[in-house]
Image (cartoon, rainbow, N blue to C red; front, side):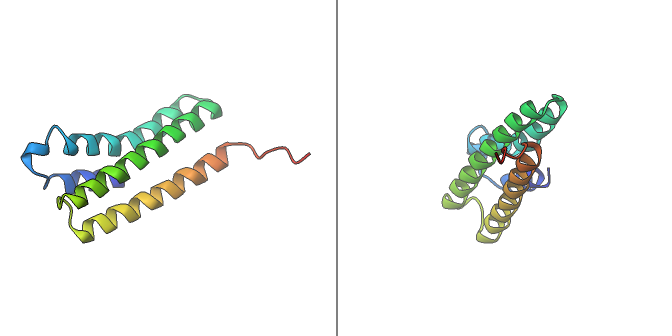
Length: 109
């Protein structure tokens, strides 16, 4: 949720003509990450949880792409993109670790 909050803060400075374009899409993908984690956890089964964690990971990749596009279009300064991308990497690592912790290890036999 910290990443989504940071994305909202940064996209406030996007041009007004992007309100229904890149701003909206970037915010939706940022919100989708914690939303899918929560929904998957609420489903009550490990299999469903892992499926929603995978969707969250896909939304994170989408968010990273949109942030990089925002930087290329000069909507995000170098410091902000660096900070956001580092947060995204951290969230990705946490997601991967969570997936590994939920998925049972493969049978060694």
